[in-house]
Image (cartoon, rainbow, N blue to C red; front, side, top):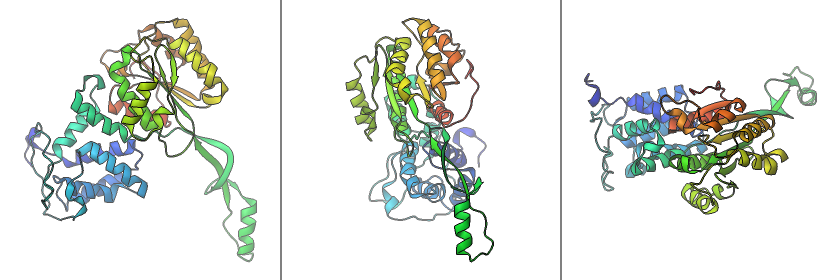
Length: 385
C-alpha cells in the first residue's frame, strides 16, 4: 500500500473502533471475534459497506439479541445500511480501495444497483474522531451522529452476590442434587453437584445537572441516561434532573424512542437552564428517596460541573451522607476533559472528598469509560481523571 498516510485506508482501525462501540452497546466483540472479521474481509471488499456489514454481523454477533444492537451501532458508525443487503452477498476479489481522508461522506447507493461500492473509510474515520471531540463543540450534523451513537449504549450495573444460590461449576457441594444424581446413576460415582451465590446487578441512580452552565452537555447526558435506563436485567435505573429543583424523570425517559423521551423530559422539567443548588437538591433526594432505600447499595452517578450557588458546606455534608448510603458514588464532570482542568469550583471541591470515582463526561469516549466505571471498573479519584 502507498506510504502516504492521508490516502491510506486501514480497515483494521475502523473495525477496532466498531468493536469498541459494540462493546459499549453490550455486544461481546472480543479480540478473537475482531480477528475473525479481519480474516473474513480478506475474502471480501473492505471498502464496500455491504461486505463490511455481513463480515461483522457473522463474526461479531454471538446471539440473536446482538444482531439488533449490531444494526444500531453499524448505522451510527458507518451511516445507513446499504439497500442491497437483502439481495445477496457477492464475493469480489480481495482489494483495498484508496480514499482521501478528508473526503465527504459518499452518497447512498442507488436502490436499483446490484453493486454496493460506497466506501466506508470516510464515515468510519469521522465517527472515530467524533468519539473524542468535546460535545460542546459539535455542530448540528455531528450531534445527529452523536445521538445515534448514544442510542446504542447499554449501561450494565456492577453486580453483587445475593444470599440465594444457584447451580454452578464452583462453590459448595449441593448434597440433595448430588444424592439424586447418585440414585439416578444406580450408585455409580458421579461428579458432585455444586451451588454458588447468585449475582444481581446493582441499582444505578443518575442525577443529571440541567442548569445553565451545563446547557451544552445536557442533551447528550440525558441521551446517555435514556440508554442507561434500558438495561437488559436488574432493577430499573432511576434518573433525576437537578437545577433549581429536583425532578424525577424515570417515567418520562422510559419511552423507547430517545427523541420522544427527551421531549417528555423537557416538558416535565421546569428549571431547565436555570441556576444550581446542588446541596439542597442532594438533601432533597436523600430525604425523599435515597434514605428510604433507593440509594442503599446502589451506584449513584452525578453528572454535573459542580457549580454551586447555594451553601457549599451543605453540599459537602449531603455528599458525605450519600457516600455512607450508596455502594459507590461516581461524579462525571464534562469540564474535567479540558486541558489544565482543576476542581477549583467551590461545589466540586466540597464534593470530591466523598466521591469514589471522578471521571470526565465531555465526549462519547468519556461516556463509554463512565459506563465501564459504573459496571465495576475501579479508578483512583483525582483531579486529572
